[in-house]
Amino acid sequence: MTPEQPINTVRFTNQGRIIVPLHLRKKFHIVAGTRAVIEATTDGILIKPITRSYIAGLRGSLKRNPNEKSFTERWSTHKREELRLEDRS
Image 1 (cartoon, one colour):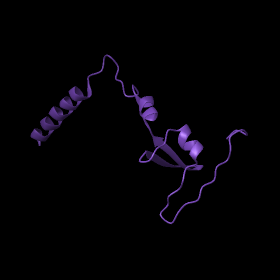
Image 2 (tube, one colour):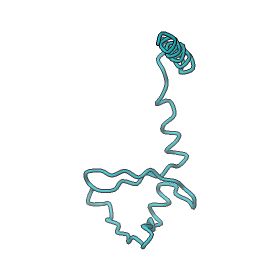
Image 3 (cartoon, one colour):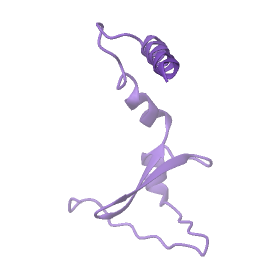
Image 4 (cartoon, rainbow, N blue to C red):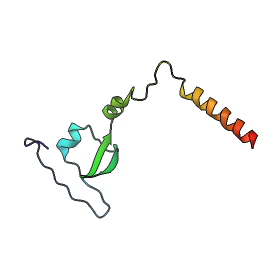
């Protein structure tokens, strides 16, 4: 955390809910119903909102190499091999 970033504190309710400060909701495009991923880290709890910009940032991260078979082709090959091995038993 850099010196110019404000430190925000929140309180947990009995149900484990928190209210994210308005300036952070605006900054990260969080609106009512926005889902989030929550992770336990060595530093504590990390909450990542799943927004359109978050999803857009993931686009292309699972692209395959041009030489690779598609997932459907690989799955089909895998299932054929699985059936072949079962028939041998």
